[in-house]
Length: 398
Image 1: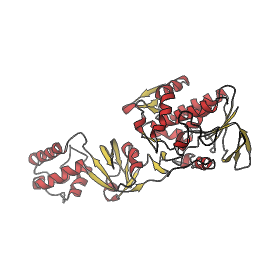
Image 2: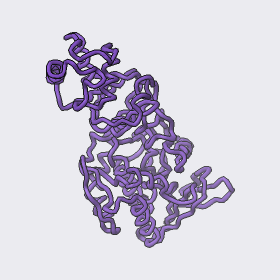
Image 3: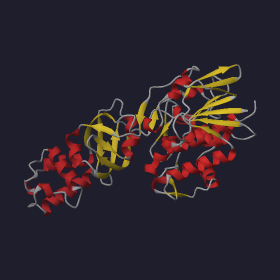
Image 4: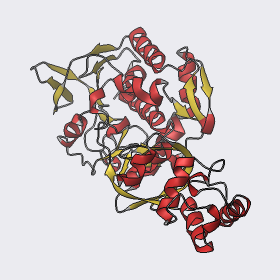
């Protein structure tokens, strides 16, 4: 049996390796000069392979329960066993994140390429698929230069629209639409948030361990101020949640309750009443952040002595420390996004096989489907799982 895999990213490589059983011919079509370019950028070049704590709660889409088929068949333990078998020594870090021990995404890509080569997968790079047609029980895959090849099964693993500079251009959506598949609204996810810049520009480069709330979701972790807004893991995880939300609220002392923060600054006023406000927060929170909060609270000028702060002003300052609001103006572009939110409607696919319910022999996996996960290895786990399931099932005899 001949199987085509459209796309040589994480899910495509896994699908091809899984499909190469029972003497099947498997060909990967990759539009870039080499496979796995986006994989090289994951985890800041270290490759956050998966997350020990990955569960249904970490995934989003119109039907998040679609991932149950993956959880039941090929999930975290199976993924780690697979990579261990490929020679990858891995380590678990904070919050369950798993990285290769060598801290190199290129090593993960190399072992995947080596495994694909060893089992006999054919990789055709610089092959941009223009269309897929079904003629009877056969699929015809055509390139833009006119080349046409016939296959018994096709797996669409093209990725989404995020990070187009690394090869994702959304072409997979058009390929699936041609077969009648519906595509949801697409939005950049795991991306920086743009806010009003008057405050954040002055704090550019400062990192805080804080809790960020957008709408009804909150995330805690390292938040980075940028010239255009906010960045960092909590921001990435909440970025797809901004639709209909006008503000991001930051708690810069999440370990303490409001009453505790208020008492702290009341005690500081008593102990250091002669200190200028510009130095009021030295030793408590980042000095520049403290100055920005004082200005936003209306306590300026910062040349005032701390003893001059009124009880009402102290309450406003404490309230800002526990709930500092930033007006959201949007997100950064697809070029900055790590993942696509939205995709091919999952109700039109079988969650246990990744096969289309509309077209027999057509499969899809990875980011092209309407499933996206939190920041921290969850999206790569979906790529490995959905790719493996699509490959194994596409290789099944009729």
